[in-house]
Image (cartoon, rainbow, N blue to C red; front, side, top):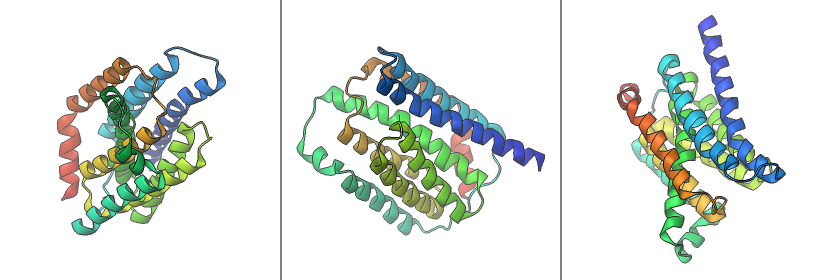
Length: 240
């Protein structure tokens, strides 16, 4: 019992730190107290590399409990996954803009990199750790939806309720799909497509240095591949 309490307490501390690091850069920019690279470094290094990659991976290495039993309906899971990607693209009005407006190649590279920074952090919490902490499917689905919704509400410095609602719906449907397939790679691909389309539509990081986004992704990939066997072996093991 004490081990479970410690596990959940550490998780909530980790999650709080993740949300604080995600919200802080936007808050600093809104307050205009700091200029230059500080908010961008907080986002790319502190949030993406440390709070979204290093700490949750280290936590999950030593605190994995159980896994959410998959209901094994691959057709339904793929249908729900495609539905949520299409639905969020329509709700956010991102799809028409992506199809009609062309941008320079560096624009797409920048948002591809920054989308990875956000997507992996969301994935490791929602689809790698939470299924192992919450054995009940209904509770897992609700917690994942709240995680997505509150996370984007915090990321917008508590100013974009519509985005929060869209991501609550996305998290809800992605979690339902996860219950039916338990394939983390599929959840990551869907999450990445949703985040990338929403970010390209809203364009919140047009002035973000490309070199800093690249550095962040390189560090994240190094951390991920240094734990490659653990991450993917755990995923394969828990599918059976």
